[in-house]
Length: 437
Ligand code: NAD
Image 1 (cartoon, protein in one colour):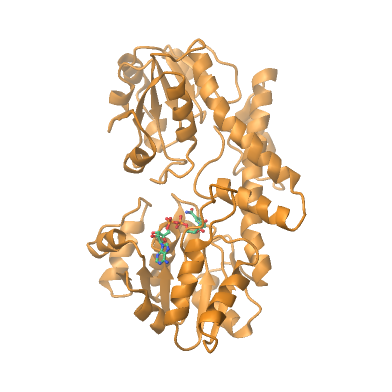
Image 2: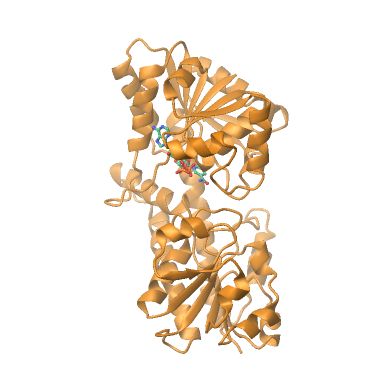
């Protein structure tokens, strides 16, 4: 099938490359000329394991191309995917749909012949209706169907998630569009991926419900970790003992510094705004958002307490900046609020991340960046392990300790066995256990 993907970001680029890999003919479009130039020059502008190779292979066989010129690609496409950003609006936390509506207007200008327009972006209930209205207003004669097809991939594991999804959700009331979508996903369905066909509004809500539930699960185990700290229980064992229950499941039960990233914070907020619009109260989601916000702030206090109550004039080395490993995405990373709070307390910040430093520089000021974690720790009074990159979870602790001026190790991912850190002479502050030396 001929597919046009609008927005060549994390979702658009991964979806485009994966659909090409499945045998479709894909054009990825982006309005950012630098992004498209980079792709045309053979450089994938985001860090996502396996994506470079997949893009290169599909460009080589002519199934994947890139352009800033939306009109010809949309005109020729049977399926047009909208994969532009839907960030939270600063004013009220609602999803900013201006990119989605902008893309819808551009599609309306260009569309020719029967075309299925697919919203891959995460959008509030009713957005499909609004996109349809925009297209009908601009081009009353256009033969289009607007379908919701939310994306569930995780950054850092995006290709595996896309090619072997737990499920594909397709929302439309239009039977012809349903057949087109079944054909688009046939290669995955043939390999056993469940395809759930449902109504458009239901499909839109599924995405938010999934993200709110996952955010709630993380927040729940984080609260239990706080209780572990007080009652001297072991959070890792609690999570294991609970997660082995198949009704609960072990994933998303790792206690840590609070969730961040480009999806959970904005999607929980947007879901709350939708609920408010309809006069429904979602108290569990409200509490999830406020508990998580408080937790992010509490992480800085943990570091300050480990350093004796003040960080004024002290140096803190933050290892890992991205909101999770294996991505360069810095959106809403918990490291940002941690660093901000420590700087306000008067600390000097050293920072290292295996892939996120380029993006981190755009979010942080007065931070010394280091390409090497040991150089980053050199002279530091405390090290904070913020993101559980594999490379940062297997450091030579003797070398690290030797490089530092102080002995404080704040392990916000419980990445190292406590005894191992204690053996190397660290003062250890982790998640879900009282600080120890
Ligand atoms: P992103 O910011 O990485 O990419 C969006 C891209 O769209 C940008 O490159 C931008 O230049 C481009 N764009 C915006 N308007 C355009 C237009 N009119 N024409 C052409 N290009 C345009 O965003 P993302 O992280 O890929 O997220 C996209 C959507 O997918 C969001 O709604 C997000 O919530 C959802 N989502 C993201 C993830 C994730 O892990 N990142 C997972 C599932 C769903």
